[in-house]
Image 1 (cartoon, rainbow, N blue to C red):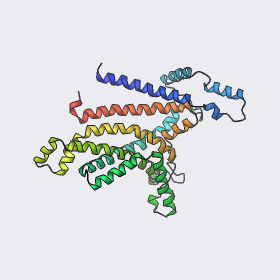
Image 2: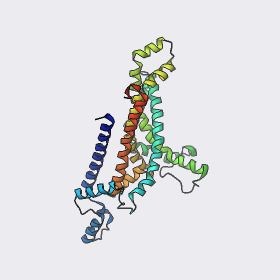
Image 3: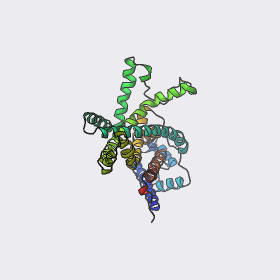
Length: 326
């Protein structure tokens, strides 16, 4: 079987496994949407009628088959809690999450690679040790804890201490209803609201990526062709830029693709803490409300994003390393 065909089959199987596992775990959790939607004074007959209307009275296998059939026909269902089509909810929240993720991923790659290369150039020195301690601490910190810590500093402490407005950042939401959303004032307001979520995602991602970039650069710098380049008169900037960084591109592309799942998972908690109206917040609310159609719709999107990112990484490796183009 050709490699690209085998990779496609593996991706489809992985996609189906993730979706099926999520469906099973969601339905095995205690309670369902009917328990949360029905008022406490409702009779058992009312609860039974609601469960029948939502299709929760059937077996798990029957519900799974029905849901798969709907998805194959392009129907993601209707939200139990909101009463809106899941497709509309995803269409509203997905662009917001993609924008947040695109900015964070770009900054993560630029800052992570730059920091890793800088540490490699000073490997073993006091600057490298301080940077390593800082990146390990940030990478190990839980995303939601880091988010709350930044809110405490840049929102509450900054407001009480009378810090300049530029560093007094809003803690929740993504727009201020008091600001006209058109023109420069709207852009400025959006940037201020996005600063803390982007900072959290970028800090965690760059801290992890820099560790791998540092290790890769140090290993490449010890190769014989680097000594040859130095013997031919290449200066430090040429050695690290033209030779080490250029040969580290395939590894960095793989690391960039592998950082996407962490960014996606981190965005769920970040959007929950900062009330960012994206996919992450929608997913969290659907879990709390046992809103199975929304939960499964979001799972489909997230799983597809990760698989597509891996495909793009394969194409990127072939572009960066001619030896692998076959």
